[in-house]
Length: 288
Image 1 (cartoon, rainbow, N blue to C red):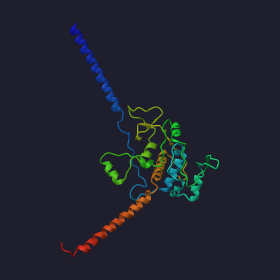
Image 2: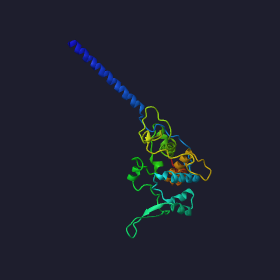
Image 3: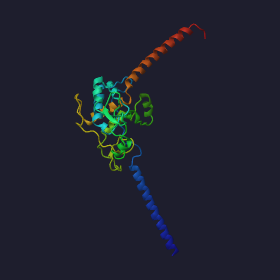
Image 4: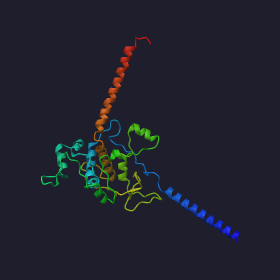
């Protein structure tokens, strides 16, 4: 009897061990299926007019990007740090900026009766937010408040591995900048890889840096925004234009900064040459 009990115990331990091993293998397979890092795909590096030491903004592109933001993005996303008067840098006249600002209703007050009121926008005003507060924004968007886009092209920092991050320091390339915005806006509609679970109410996007999916539905579609300059009315063109516009919104003085930097480099080269020849002139006839 004792031998029989020992045999059953050994059999039981064997079954438990087998089940435990199978469970570990299943868990390991699940972990292997789930991605460990995000984004699942890196955004393609596009060619932008404002990159490089002599890069400049394309004003026609920025105007198209502003139109995409106004007609599509502004329904959910704010642009709190941009004044209407800054739009003169896009090639608009002061009268055009005044007319553009007047299309918006701005909360102001209190008046002499202590009440808040609305008035047409002025060039000195900022772009108004689409929601009164963050809680209202979250409640209207499935619990996730849409982020402000004022600094989006500079705020999405993604540090790439060695040795690429070394070159990024020199070139000032930011993978989370315009390339990321363009990739995210054009990355909807793809099929998730095997083993990736998409939470209900979210949308798969392999370029999203915080997970496999996000609450924002695909915001763009072909023919959604009418262009007056003959540019293609496609998702790719919309995404390119609004990404360039958001880069300008994040750093409107980029062009001036590069021009100043170029002048400084010329000054340093000339100064170094003068210093060298001065040193040579002073110390040439002195014995060492």
